[in-house]
Length: 187
Image (cartoon, rainbow, N blue to C red):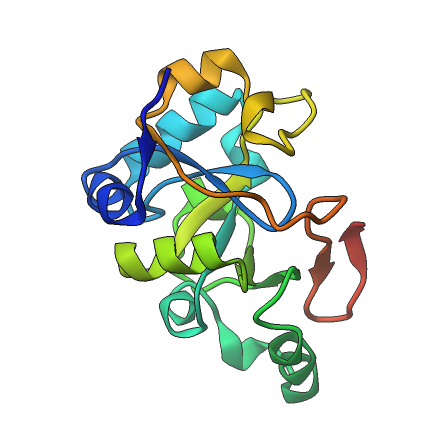
């Protein structure tokens, strides 16, 4: 069983390539350093998720996400809509920077991102010093964990730690919308 960690213990572990579970707005998430290909591929293997599905990045503010995004490709009125929704439980699929790695984008020209208002998520991102991968802490096809006690025991044994805290209490994972037109991919 993975050890429960405070933020000041979790951030250095992420910097060393660790994979952690942490509470998000609705469910428990799995995260790692998105720049560390080995950590991302390990996370995907633990989740039994194919790389071509892509991943969500979460941050405490826009600055750490800028290098992953092609913000000029988004019309100003659409960017304004996205920015007005943050920080908050809104995930947007946005144009990806040309050098965004396929292990994050799934080989697409877009990337899903969120600026969270959840206190544990923001503290973890701040402590780590950047954006993190944020995907539900469950194996492919299994339901997400809404409480710490619902984490899959196999995941619990395989990850490097669990960040202390509680989810934000949302009934469903954050909606995912396309920034270019506002269409909903997940409600």
